[in-house]
Image (tube, rainbow, N blue to C red):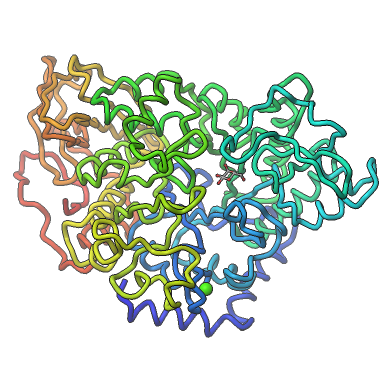
Length: 638
Ligand code: GLC
Ligand code: CA
């Protein structure tokens, strides 16, 4: 988006900021609905999250509207057109609640307010409405395992006598010997999961930082408060909640205090409250565990709608580095089926380190060796780097990894800045190196803020390779070959096919293990079948492979970016060649005698796809079509 446009949006946001009735009333009206009726979400399809493309961002890092060096809601509103053009359909906001910010906002001191540095509650509502108007859903954080030690509940608890209801909000012990089996998560900073509180004269329990005391779910009043906070945001119209650190709600002697039956019962209770009062809202589990251990978080379709696939992520990087598909096929083979109404959330990078908890010791050593040459790149059990630096700024590798996350079963998540290949700053502490300001243009502070540079919450990245003069949205919008344009086109293409979000997965096993090949297939309730063959070359050299596609003999693979028909499939092995790090998405179409009707697509997507890249003149579809060729979908410019 141009800066002139940005100014207009920012101005608009500020102008309507001081409690102007219009926008706010809209929302209040929604809250006042009859409670016997379920409160509708912004999405119409109850399974909307299966077709979603999630974009993860921090309000603080996105756009500063008032020159204080900190991103805010009016700033974010001014950038919504950019996100809409990118094609993402759901915005995941990192915590924006009042907080001492010692864990980037995951240390919450008030669940039902907005941190004043990001704006007001009314600003949030304006944002929510603006996102909904653009057809985007909104996912926010529900961090219920712990609060900040500055939360009034904790302040009251430490002053209250042992055994009192106030004290009971947290988990206390006179010694630090209980729950000895429980591992420490932030190994770099914490020595124990217990910390002594002088005022209370007792130890309190914490799974994360010592300034984040764990709430005591054995106290029913805690669950009541959690439900209250949850309803506060759902009533306002929030579509989805990420359940942070969800395995650790309960503690029991002699266990690792992880995934206890009591914890699952609590999640079911939360889910039941959502299903009872609301429609088309979802919860997403953050459970950094093996797929079989995560499986129970879906319950019988009555716990979380979604869960992150943590072990897949490092294995994608491992497969790339080893030029071998095994790490990927192996972890997918260990991934159990999930209920029909559930979905995996897939990602390449996020706001945390690339966690290596879900790999073996050998694999961890390998990953450290391959991806973190400088010890500064390591933190806790992981690597704190962004996507582009992890793959040495190699465009083909970035595209290859994205092609996988966009075509594996699940809902893909794009971490802000990765769509332009932003770098990181390993000289910042904690995981802050991957949380620097979004790079919009080559102006002061990357167009993120008009503050003096020293005032920014974190410095923008400035070196010659990753700096904002080299990598920014404005430049990439005007460059038709940019990563941004590529990402946008891939997102648009994916959105034309429901098979990616909803279909089955079956790996092929060509003898050449540098080639990863899989079939995605989906038959919609109206009987329309989509079958896609994905082939990826994990190697830095060209590769060839023979694929057994005999089940599809007679069909024609059509390359989906250019609608280019490939030779028909026979019952003989299908030969395919790939340039280094390249991939194909091939739709398997029936032979031309029986052309298939194109699947329905939204008018908006059709228009966008037909338009080609942003700011580019609309292009004529590729002219490879002859009367005998298979039917094209809406053309996408490659
Ligand atoms: C989650 C968040 C992480 C945070 C931790 C403690 O793992 O992703 O950023 O530090 O919870 O709240
Ligand atoms: Ca600001």
